[in-house]
Length: 40
Image (tube, rainbow, N blue to C red; front, side, top):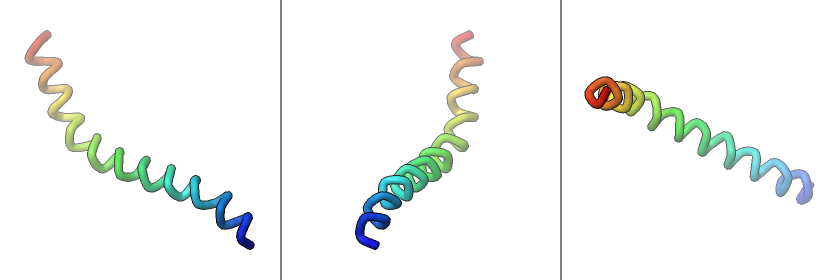
């Protein structure tokens, strides 16, 4: 049980940071695309 928990914990952190990154990146995508259009 303890070994399984330690094995699953990093995956949960990866999914947590992936979801957090997506939530931050989705709104910023419009800003980044807007900056690229502005510079290009």
